[in-house]
Length: 84
Image (cartoon, rainbow, N blue to C red; front, side, top):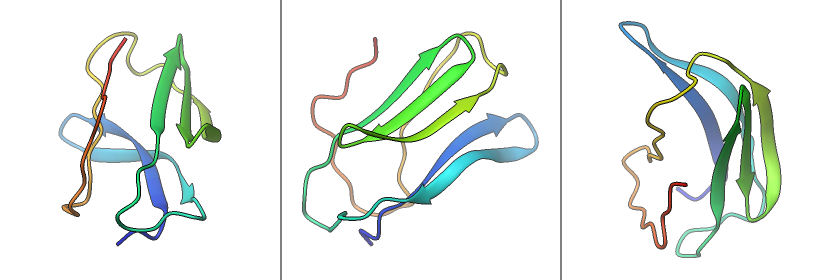
């Protein structure tokens, strides 16, 4: 819907997802490109939208493993997706 709502989730086996942080970013509208990033350094997670940090959380649940980016069944496109 392009309303700027976001969540940073931690998937928990057999318990669904735990919300680590959530909020709303202004200036998000449909049919426009935005840059999103998730950085992990030790137990520190930082999520950014268009270069602005929207969440900084501490969580040590996973020292290694997979990261994912998903949508709520809204049509989205990803361009230049990298994992490093």
